[in-house]
Amino acid sequence: MCGIAGWIDWQQDLRQRQSALENMISPLTCRGPDGSGTWVTAHCAMGHRRLVVIDREGGMQPMSRRNGQGIYTIVYNGELYNYRELREELISLGYTFSTKSDTEVLLSAYMAWNHECLSRLNGIFAFALWNAREQTLFLARDRLGVKPLFYAPLKHGMLFGSEIKAILAHPEMPHQVSAEGLAEVFALGPARTPGHGVFSGLHELRPGEYLQYRRGRLQSFRYWNLLSHEHPDNLLTTRQTIRDLLEDTVQHQLVSDVPVVTLLSGGLDSSAVTALAVKSSNEEHKGPLKTFSVDFADMQKHFKPTAFQTNLDAPWVERVSSYLGTLHSRIVLDTPDLTNNLVRSLHARDLPGMADVDTSLLVFSEAIKQQAAVGLSGEAADEIFGGYPWFHHPDAIQSQTFPWARRLEDRVSIFTNDFINYIRPLEYVRRRYEEALDEVPRLVGESRHAERIREIGYLTLTRFLPTLLDRKDRMAMAAGLEIRVPFCDHRLVEYVWNIPWSMKTQGAHRKVILRQALEGLLPDDVLWRQKSPYPSTPNPSYFLSMRNELLRILEDSQSILHRIIDAGRLRGLMDKGPMAEQIPWFGQLMGNAQLFAFLIQAHYWYTDYHIQLM
Image 1 (cartoon, rainbow, N blue to C red):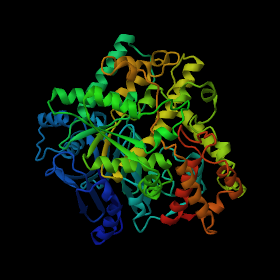
Image 2 (image 1 turned 90 degrees about the horizontal axis):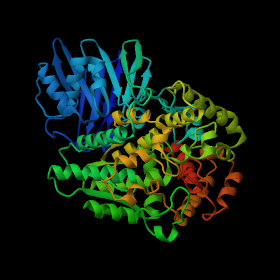
Image 3 (image 1 turned 180 degrees about the vertical axis):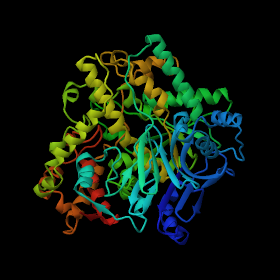
Image 4 (image 1 turned 120 degrees about the vertical axis):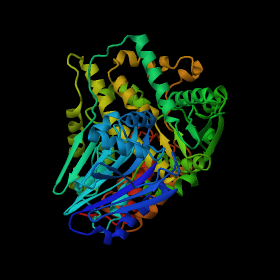
């Protein structure tokens, strides 16, 4: 994994502006701690920070190759899991290779097939490619958006980068945020509208899109979409297909020149990935697999079962690790680990995020990085198989909004009237929700219930999952750790998308088809365990710490929060204390303590990013 950044300018000689490019790639050092490189011509400058995973000597970037009369240069962030197969195909077409890197394979694939190469790629990627002869820039992003890529058109050119901070580091990029940008943060956040960069003039290339830019003309195109059709397979074939796809995906994602570990929570999804990784490792005689879990000090003392989390993860982690014979490390965090790193997690995401859920992953990733550079995680199984509560609870199914954010009115209730009138949060979220529904690929003849489940599935894959993928990428890459997500393999997503709901779930059992597909791989009690979300600390000390820090910030009359929050209404939440019932305002984990943390991050976001309100 790596960080990329670049600058196109048709009126300046960028060879005289090398320092501006260096400023852009410097904030990406944590994404690529193992090396850096720049490539500068009159009108195109590209930079790269490298995390070595494949071909330490041969994978340096930017990388240039000649093809006929043209010279092509690439900067690339990601992994191609099928690069060996592509390499053989390209050799048969006459291409030669001087390295063993997937970067050279990707560059050659583009030279061979132009934008049509994207349909052949299996992996997670974001890359920029400059065609010197035609003076064109090509940007592309993987189908599910695992790897980020932002861009900002300028008067005489364009900027691009892996993270927002890289583009904001350029001297010609303003740090302005409009009412719409504030609505993204305070009404939709920590989710975002696909393609929206929050800062004025900043965009994110959407998952499954590519962009072509030449002087005076910028065009974006979709190369991948979910398609709805009748599911052709019976139950037995469906189970076997899922199992085959998962086995193939995990096997391919274990390819690396450095050790690969897994993140193990004891839940179905991470346990399945771990079991398949162990199976592959055993077949290749690689020795015991290393696994890692995160937990919190005094978890057993403070834990209270809820509808979302009925029991503790730790005993299940031990059960799975013992059953599979992994070398396990349990990382235990305490409240100071979360509070002391809250602003660091803001800087990693570049936007207010998911509070202790973000911060714990950042610290957890740093602990893993001490032993490994690559990990596999179970993200996205709930999104594609329908494991979240909002797929099952009638009130969530019937809600006419994003089902993970049904408490918008409660959230808005702490805003000042002026701020509500300025960003119009209810209207903004409603518009974004209706836009999302308009995108849903319909299937003619479905019942209204099946149609609604398809809508919720689409919303979850395109609006909720990106929030978790952003979190995973930014927090892990801030520690120089690459996380791979087998359940985001596009072949699996495409296949499961059209499996009928009656196959995916049965009565009280969710993700039944996945559990059936994994029979024999895990113990039955693990296989049929109820979903448990990523752990969030229940320690009252976290609530108190976040409340006290927010109160301290509110004493500053210059804080931006005074223009956003009605302090009197907010204190009403504070006075309820840590033992009051926590009804999540986003997803399953964001209660009052997390709301306080979100507002603390908003304060520092405004100051640390030198934001100018429009």
